[in-house]
Image (tube, rainbow, N blue to C red; front, side, top):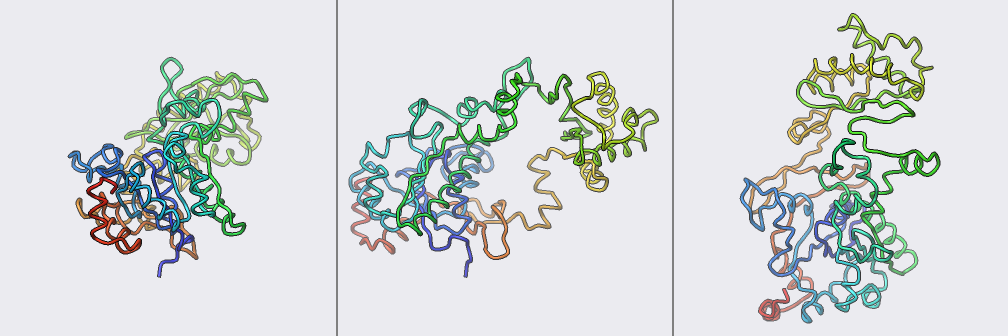
Length: 412
């Protein structure tokens, strides 16, 4: 028997890519998540990349990645007959997740108050670029626009060029996790108090919450924050964070205090084995080293030795030596590196899920691991309308004739 943390709970997932991660996380916590798509399929089924670079509604690897563990039905919630079915489903679930523009559900007669009248304990999770209310709530937005307006892009990119987007859709990933966290909190409240809530998630606000140190620096110290490429500004001195190695890149940042001292000394000792003239030897006691007080001239001498030193080694060599020596250097992995990672393999991080169209596909298995619960995806993403019969016929008790009628009316 499955032992998911939230086994027995159910959710309807109406989202596009803005909210996919929320439903995925809930599914891995044990919630029975039903992905609801309009007849013909969500446009997000055509987001690349595609398996073997062949487009198709069942070939989007983006779709496959973010909808594992869910069941799937087709349903037009604007169609009057489709709305009847949707209302019946709402009576039977604990969560509804949506990412429509603010006000859309109210306009079609399915706003939160209507849903709460149907099911008093319902938790409605709404994930949008700028939230349900406020000065930007009615603006058109995307992940890129929302994180740009959060301030994140103020810090990303070279100072003499345009800002650059963060890796993948990080704003949507974080917003989805925030939505799942809010959903679980509201669910427990509903169980205790008997009343549902609407969880309002703004991608912009979630992205801004990741800028704690930058916001404090600007607000309290009036530091002018600028894009500085691969460097970090500490007082008057600009220091490097990212470095090239023989076959890629790595992150290593000189820090002071009890946390930074052992790593700084470990790197200096490693460099001693290769360099006759190692400028890091100038620091006699790393525990007393004040990184904020280093001059630009001294740092430039350090960097001039560190830069060619890292270029001697491959990512694998740096990873191995960093673990062995404690330098705190972290390599930048590409997808192939992750698939070949000995650490991830030994942790059982990957799993193969059987896709009816594409065959076995490899996915990350866990959202998190626990001694007491099983929190992982067991099934590949649903095909278009894969569970229509299972849910409409077996769970709602509709007749085959009724289902055919709904199909002819384009309700499902």
